[in-house]
Image (cartoon, rainbow over all chains, first blue to last red):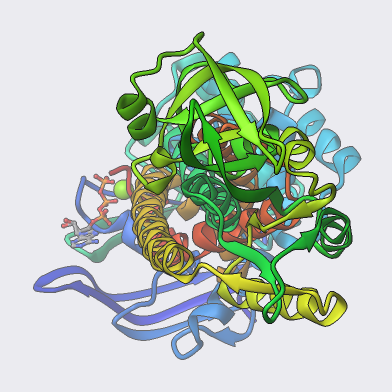
Length: 220
Length: 355
Ligand SMILES: Nc1ncnc2c1ncn2[C@@H]1O[C@H](COP(=O)(O)OP(=O)(O)OP(=O)(O)O)[C@@H](O)[C@H]1O
Ligand SMILES: [Mg+2]
């Protein structure tokens, strides 16, 4: 059984057809890159897969559960247990330190555990920056805190919308290296990117155009 | 947030201040109104002429000392002053000053135990006498003559202006009426019902005494107080409403400002309950902080009102403090309801869309 299966998924915002007839299968351990021009529907798709929005029609099966007819509360607990999110703008809480920003994900999931949070920061090479505020960290470091936060609750699926979009090349490399490591460890990853070079590093590229899947190809 | 804290603090200031004044004012006002004179007369029962001075001691024991403003004995008798028959009263000038603080004196009050005289203004004018002049008092069957000095002239706006006043013991001695008085004026802080209860108690324990209530003043006292309390109540309600609106708007601004953060927390798996608890918790802390601040300020506010208006300090009341704290927390809680609703409706999807 695949980890994620989308069948005929459509999403409309009023008259705007953001997604039309999306069919997609993601296997456990795969690393997919979603690519396409601006406004093509990549973020919309991420929101649906990440249990943050409900599709207008079609079925989404995540870990053998059909998401098309569950309540908002169930969607929340699904998101909490199965999804790890990495954002282009990092979205760290400005008045919390790096380790506290990781612990807040633990807090809403189960119980904050500082030792575990510190280990997660160590994992992304930020052990010595644990007590720093986001404003005291570089963009690349903030993104690594964000990745540590996404990993802390052992998600089945990591979603990253333009994770390197706000980073310079050096930091992009560090972050991509972490994604490679995660992939090697067997994590299932979905990244959205504009950058062909970044897209190529994934196992598989899905090109979206005008809300439809235009192309799907393996990288070598 | 600071503005909301300030709003709550001001709200709590007004509440605790107003409530203190609300409960304290009747007492204070009572004392204040007592400056308009006695509200109880003690006269002899039946067709007796005199009261014994010692009876007053018994009455004093029946009255609550913290409520008693003063009790002034009077002995009335016509005596000859400079060969003219004048209605003269012997009294205790210290007590008169307490019972009738509105008496206006030109010159000075006679000293207790002295042979000094206080003349009513009308009488003084008729006799053409000014303070410092001497008078001859003629009393008794033997027409004994005593020299006395006019210490002062008194204006009251009432019939006292036709009287001459002297120390009670002096008049008693001149008339050989030791220990005797005609009546006593009592000024006591009490409302109409309390006054009646006291009067009943007095007449029960002292069959020689008939207490009479001087109703009019006491009655208008009550109406003025009632109106004042209604006004204070109204002001408090309005201030509470204003606080509510102010806190609600600030909290709303805070929620809007933190839309991203709320969305993020939801994206990280926070359910509505967690979000509600976050904000209500914050609201309660705000309410408690503002409340404590306000209670302190309110106490000083009430204190200064009390000292400046009534000339008397008030005690800190833990009951009022607790009540104000409770109201502040309640108000912030209610004010948080709408903002919390907005927070619940924030969609987690916004965090991926870089609005
Ligand atoms: N909340 C919304 N209400 C209305 N229309 C929306 C909403 N969100 C997205 N859209 C529309 O849906 C379409 C797809 O948007 P989406 O954000 O998924 O694009 P994208 O591929 O992520 O673009 P970008 O690369 O610029 O991030 C766009 O035409 C957008 O205007
Ligand atoms: Mg996008």
